[in-house]
Image (cartoon, rainbow, N blue to C red; front, side, top):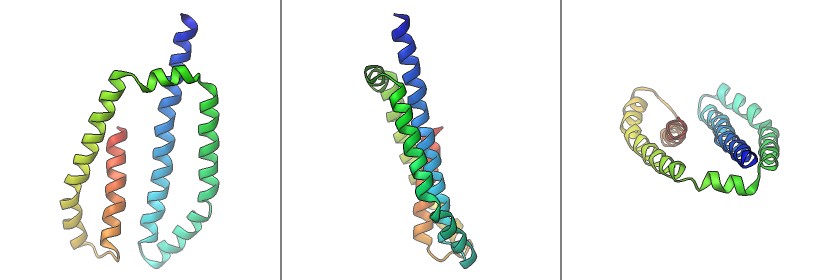
Length: 137
């Protein structure tokens, strides 16, 4: 029984690392996208950062595979099919969707005051980033 509890606790720790790594990678890609939509000097910085992006993605995939090897598949399934986790995920997706909808009017008003080249693209990137941050909290 103690071994099963240890395996489930380890699977919980691994399942907590996956969204954190995914969110970090998404934030890096979102910042690069925002920089690319900015002025010419920011676009050069975005190009420099995006050159190193495949290395960051490869490291993230390697870390995720290493985490998957540490946990038992049955324990990971038990963690993923937990009823409280499923309820929490449903609530988080709904809240993230509502944040994305509520953010649109604020972005429209703020982008009117600030001159940006690609308003729709900036709105899309900021909406995805905001909803992911809200979802992750």
